[in-house]
Length: 70
Length: 515
Image (cartoon, rainbow over the protein chains, first blue to last red):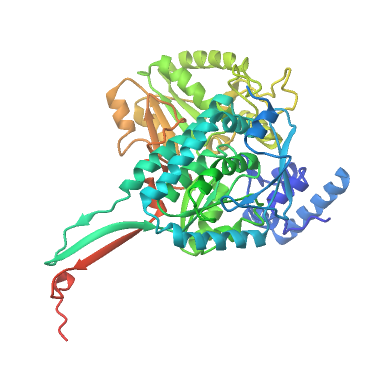
């Protein structure tokens, strides 16, 4: 399955745990107070003022990392 | 100490558990399965079937239906159910406390303490049920009576966090149920078993008292199933959420859009002030409990210590020495000798390590700890040596809440007002404390120009609140109050009534309106 921008952060963490570190380098904290933040990957990116292109790139990077992790 | 299997057997936890109940009926749902792993050893405890969107609809419909009946049961009769729940919790205090430890990782003493909080709030709610009163007021019109009363509110949604996996449900539910509301609980996906165990414990009480299905609901679900839709659901009259400021802000926006009610218990960045007049015999052990208790994963954990320059060196020496003792007691939280258990997962460890790095990058100095603990039984990498770092209050990392045992020491000079300014200079406003034997310092700290937090203690630490006081904080902590004092009011609908027992129709403000 491909990661899309509509995936919730909670599902992203559970199914693709490597995402936490990747998004942390982009300034997105997926876990706060020990719990995943609510909302989608796209919403988390928009909160950090990502452009559409940057969001697409993040999704692409995560899918690439997923391939490498398989 | 019971074995893991004995704990699970006593609480009715199977290998695979249903994650949805409306009180006594359990439902076999078709959502994803969540596996609960113990942070103690990383081993699987059991798994739980999550609810789906269809299940959510069923629960809310059932809850709304049950509310119609429950709201008309007299409050003291409703509270009798709560009293019996308190008795059942007493009976299961040890296994439930142990399961809290097994699933969440806090030390067993704190696991027991968590269940005791549940019992305490049940006792509190029983008495409160006879005192959910309003006021009778003086009317300006002859032969009129002006009165205020409190009515049941409706469906209370409760979202809880892993660090207090069952006590927070009890704080909300005991009062809400006594107030005539029905509750829908979404427990943390990290600690679903304690929620299931709690519902197992109370179900006999519900059966014996013929409590309608739909009064006590619990559904284990992902935020994609019970997230924004739950927050935005007009059928949920009050949304009580305990969690991060990030999730709280989201909740406030979504619930606010529909002008719904929220009770938010969010992040803290709690400080202890140590003045030159502090009794260090009290300040040191109290503050160590505040910083390393629950491995730094309480919302009231002491994150900053603001110390006067005159006592700074002495305090630091004693504080570091105390940590050296603590370091020897990092281990399995079920072991009675342990003071610090594991963090909840590898992400928390990562955030802890990042904080240790960041504070040094910003110019701080690490005085103690900060590494992953090593030794027999600690191999899963979730045990850390609590960290002490000298820092400045304006550091970005100090302004944030790191949910792990890292504490920042900040030196101040001059009067107590300077320490209070540092205490208040963070976005959060949950808990605060001052250690002093000087009356003027203590009273200044508690005055209008003092601490801006919801909790302000004198010669007692930031964590470990009693059930009798209202619990909550200001600013980015969310402003909610739950537990004791008059927190019950948030679970009720306030109503003002004017009763005319005359044969005339005088209008307020003396307005003449003659037809």
